[in-house]
Amino acid sequence: MAVITQVVAGVDGTPEGLAAAEWAAREAMRRGRPLRLVHAWEVGLPEAATEAALPELRAPQLHARQVLRTALDRVGERYPHLSVTAEQVCRLPVPALLAEAENADLLVIGSQGPSGLGGFVSGSVAMATVARIERPIVLVRAGATAENEHLPDSDGKPSLHTPFRDVAVAVDVDGACDEVLDFAFQAADLRRAPLRAVHAWHVPFSRGLPDAEERTRIRTESERELGKLLEPWRNKYPAVVVKENLHEGRPARVLARAAGGAGLLVVGSRRRHAAAGPRTGHVAHALIHHVGCPVALVPHE
Image (cartoon, rainbow, N blue to C red; front, side, top):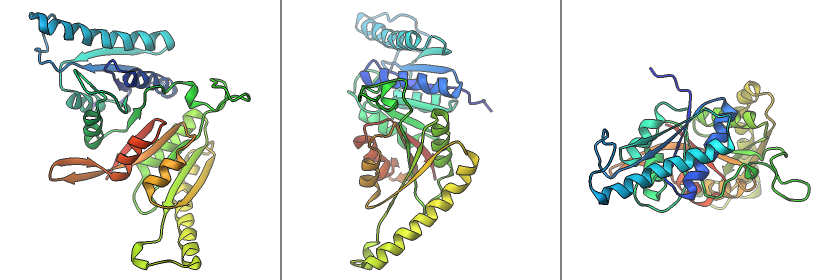
């Protein structure tokens, strides 16, 4: 069994891909891991081919090489002490990403972007990867910078010298979420950042219109369950300051609002098997499209 010791970033030449590579570089440094950059070139050349014979294939091949070189140069310039490797993979993007993730602590890709030749971050590629992946994956939007991970300075300006923003984590008190909480606490611990544990509660529709007493009872029970779930992780990560946030409402809306100001949002990605193939849960799907900060999706059953 291979030892998982690296962070992998998929790049494709878009701003999203470059932002993902840089975010992955910072995360690799925090974890003390090397970084691997990969680019999938799907024109269909044999893997052993070094040069395209046909002119119509030569330009895409050169473009694919430039994509990887640009990302490698950018990361090397900004993070010169990080161990970085890069490889061009002659494979369709989704299978390439899934294969790379098998030997990684974490896979990082762009969250949105145009589809096209070798496009790692096209919507269909990103969603197909999220639905099938067995390892944690982080989706990063274009424009995400190192300064975005920190609070602004006293003048309201971006800074690298202020504390990290909170790590927010969605907590479902009714489901198993050990993998999700472990990832979130570790992320907060690595950043020396507070952890914002967010839980959305609501009164089931079957009970009709609730009175104040019923709503208070449900909220109190949710608070108790949330505290119970967090207790062992507080003990495991004693340096992490935990903020418990409970909000009434549906999870997707609550979490989208609660992620405001966070540096990272961690969400469980529950397996959904449909006739058409694996699907991402509706909450995770909504957050991918509506949350501006990087979103970490941690698979669980």
